[in-house]
Image 1 (tube, helix red, strand yellow):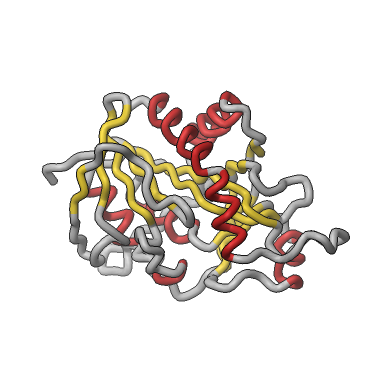
Image 2 (spheres, rainbow, N blue to C red):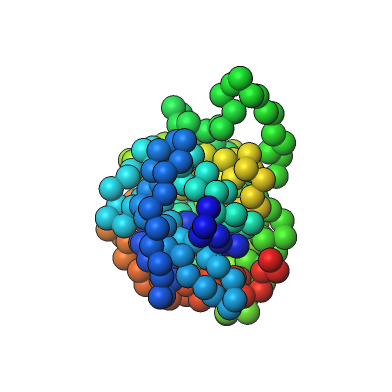
Length: 251
């Protein structure tokens, strides 16, 4: 590839653009096209590649995102680290909307998604005990604190199939088995990055309480409109975190 990048960023719901003075490139991979054209720009002397995982017009629901093409494109570009912000719901009363959470574990509740590059004849069994890169996690927490944000260090990300949100019973069960936050896109994105040996971190911006908060009838179940509203209110904060992390990452 002529165009190279040091750091990759995936944008989730509400984050469809991120960089300034970009050059957009189109890519093809053995797994099809990525979600959209890839924006490449320089930040503090480092080349950054940005892909909106749902597409700029949010054309891909979570179970249809071309995850393998997105990760493979990052690998082709030479990306050494991936930062993956997402809009996420809270499964804990003490974690509220507009908080940030940097999870360290994951429970996959998706089905039918292409989640490996090794379907044969080459087969690879990867270690996935710790889904998120600990160095990037520590950096994300540090930067959030430096920016005066309320951040939760660690937690269990529950990934559901979508595109619907949880029932109250499902949400209660996810919480009872140790879930901290809930999202629809972290799997298989993070495991594909691991297969490509790219350190990966999630930054969850909490937008809601999933199916509501028991004992608090005034807190309603999540809606897509509410997710967008809260994420947009925090857009500048997440962008500041991303820029600060990029500046501090040694490449």
